[in-house]
Amino acid sequence: MDLDDLSKLGLSRDAATLVVSAASWMDDAMRAWASGDIAKVGLMAPVAVEHLGKAVLWHKNPVLLVQLDSSQETTLMALATAPSLAAKSLRTIGLKQVITRVEKVLGGAPLLLTKNRERMVNVRNGVTHVGAADVSRHVLVDALALAHTLLKHLDVAEQKFFGSHSSIVSELLDEKRSATGHIVLERRARAQQRVKDLRASLGPEAFEEAAAQLEMRRDELVAPDGLGHRVEVVDERCPVCSNEGRLFGSIEIEDQVDFDVEPVGRGEYEAVPTPYWEILFSPLAFECAVCRLAFRNPDELREAAMSTSIYPVNPLDLGDDFDLDELIANETASYEF
Image (cartoon, rainbow, N blue to C red; front, side, top):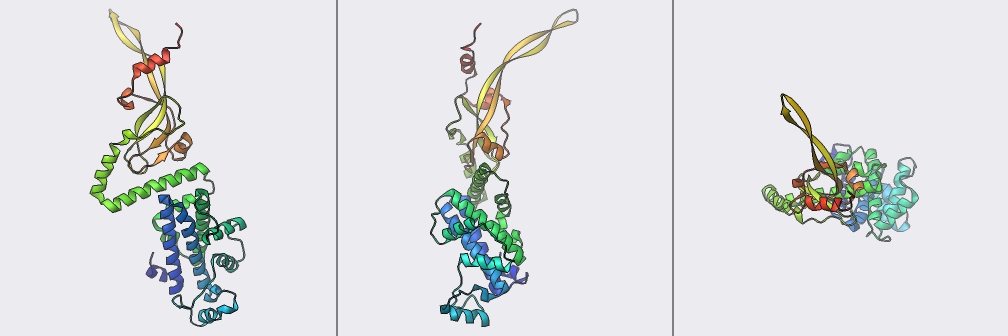
């Protein structure tokens, strides 16, 4: 986003400057969220809202940014007679007052629940610790919801403001998304950010070489704790970087019978039963060695639109360490004949 684009939307230079600043802070917040730097998220997202809210107030009337304090006479006169963000003496209101005044400008309806507003303001002012993932995520979602409303008032397209984050922003604002859904969304965003950062730092060719080397080390990935016994792995394409990852799952064997047809003479045939063991694989978790995307249980797999259905596999798909004869022996040890 740049000032030239915004000037075409009918915003003053100073209002446009505030929107561009807000977009930059929100971009930083989204990047911090994607990289797992949750402390920064809780600080950057409220700053983005503060600047965007100030843009709304400036667009209505720059005087709306003045503090209601007799000591701010200079600021009042500057904003009323020759408003400019570049003025050295300019002292404006903080986030809490910005939200309050924006609500009045937009018609008085609350933009956030009181507790959500207090949480965002306290995080912005350093009163509330932002090292907790749930606090930062809630603040980010509230900030995005506020930005959605403010951008509409300014007639600024969300695609232009959020840029490459637009699709993820829409998913974050999905009120129907479950707690597991947010976990999956965060992990996917972080994996995408890792790939993007690696491409940017290494270049296309070097990235492909590095990805191939990492992919070859997928055998070193270890199954998450709590999946039970008899966990095996098969190759599965990663939904983020498209490299081969590892799908962890439980297996069972079932005795099956197939029939072959053999001639018995004079043009007659008979069905000959051929018993065999079918290996059934039940997906439980996934991890990629390249982008480090990880889903640690079936609920996360389902939320990520990865199959959790049981399906038959070939012993060769389970790697060199898989021993079908040993499994059959263990499975049949308790049978009574």
